[in-house]
Image (cartoon, rainbow, N blue to C red; front, side):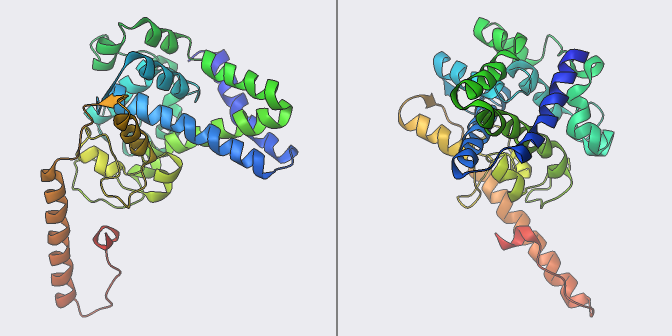
Length: 298
């Protein structure tokens, strides 16, 4: 990332403070929500579940539309984003993971890696995302000129609603969405509960799942990456999956990958084993009985 691009990034981050100089209204809060959550779905649906994990298929037009919306989130291009995410899974919480709080610390995992030009600006040519999707000119365009969609969004917000719309429709939601996304790399490897005993420190967290439109069910995802849904159960809020299912119903998405029954069976087995361990420890411990594990309350 060049010095100019870094300066623009930090300028946009600081611009969220302008919200204190614009009188809030229900309409402006609604505008923030649309801008935040729509672009969040673009990121998670296209960049994450489609490009990185091939969780479903969609036609070229739908792919470009969602990739454009995701790129408008101002988190670089689809090939860069998805390619680094593949590396995150390949080396999760070990050397080689571009954003692990266990390996590189919280600040670097949250935002430092994103700004690190020398180490993370380029991807290897054999990266599967670059190899398979870099051949499409429209995707290469978004990846190279990733500043175009967010710039067009900012211009549109100002043209339609002036300064208040620029602040509430671009500045604030761009910042909240950035940290909602980055939190998956940090918060979800530090706080939450683990349904599955994965080799990394991934955790499920309903708070991050809300603001990152389903990505907060991170331990689920690390256990079975191919599924189109990260919320494995109906009570786990996953609006990105709801959009994918809606697209499937009208023929815009197909080959939607489910969570295999063996994964659900594993979840039940882990829960039963932990319950047995908890019961045994209670019988052996004459001290105060602790709270139930969060995952045992499912």
